[in-house]
Image (cartoon, helix red, strand yellow):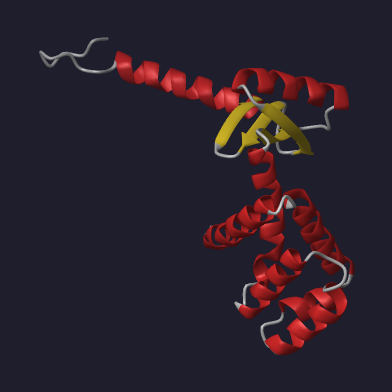
Length: 194
């Protein structure tokens, strides 16, 4: 959680500068390309993330390999992370940039978990209904959660909707228990109401 909070500060600063320059989407894409390159080359990822490699050496390698391939803003930001010893935040920042882009465009990404993969038409229909309910454009990201018996679980930022079979059974259990508690409650004269 602390990592998310620290990364959010860096992301917000980068997003503000990129938006001011009219390059927010391009900056997010450049970050995606950088983390994609790190993913493809484990030795580069280890070098970049290593706390024992000299920062000057990292900056020099980044200058040689990135300075001519990306915008000055993105390049300087990646170098800043190295100088501040925050290289480990790059993946989180890349993800958060997309979240900020979506929020800026009035879009909300919804993680939609089901027991089996949804057909694209079903996913689109669910997104349409959610967009209608929440009065904003919902971008669905379907995922499979085999622990679900059936139904669907939707996560949109801080909003969590559990319409799974297990969630409904838990809701029924709580309702039944609250009914039992109410039935056995005592009246003001000390007698039970049941």
